[in-house]
Amino acid sequence: MPERQTSRKDAIRNREAVLAAADALFARRESPEDVTMADVAAAAGVGKGTLFRAFGDRAGLLRALYGARLEPIRQAVETGPPPLGPAAPPRDRVPALLDALLCFKLDNRRLALALEEGGSSSTYRAEHYERWHSLLRAVLEQIPGLTDSDFTAHALLAATRADLVEHLAGEGRIPRERLRAQLANFAARVLASGPLQGLTVEE
Image 1 (cartoon, one colour):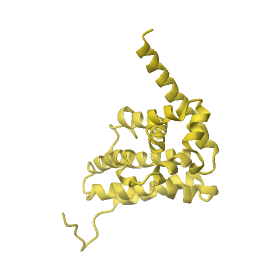
Image 2 (cartoon, rainbow, N blue to C red):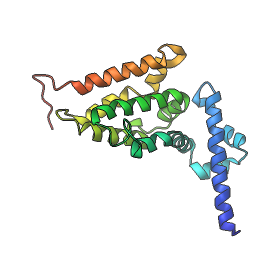
Image 3 (tube, rainbow, N blue to C red):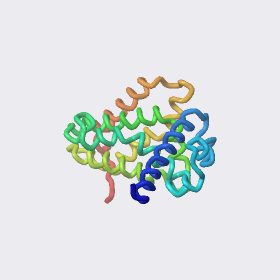
Image 4 (cartoon, helix red, strand yellow):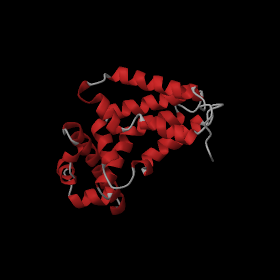
């Protein structure tokens, strides 16, 4: 087997081991900040140099793990059937997208918190946020009579921020199904509302 092919297989195997180790560590620790790059390297059985070469820094590792966990939803959104897939009516698809994102945040609370709170850059400039915002804005633009799709997409996504989800769902304050119902009702009210009388939006 050529050396280059062997190195590539080793790199893939190391990456999978690192993601699995990070996944387990974030699931066990109470605070995302308790998980360090050294912890992940030790759990995966690789050197810290290997970890930094593969992911760049802690934020890069978080993004990779987040993306791996989100992959089934991404596939459902891009090619799946309604209500998440592209063939769904916009008024059905918007709440379905928000519900999928909320459920993902509930199932991955520590990881989502670590990703959204980590680093010095704005959450709103993060690749994962821009992707969801662009998708939601595009679906909102398909709804007749609905204006300000860009702002509305931001406002709806704000209801699924990891820190808000943690505040509402942490320590069992609001049960999962009730939180999902509240988000669905909020989205329905937004989609049913029109511009307030007497108010205009300057372009």
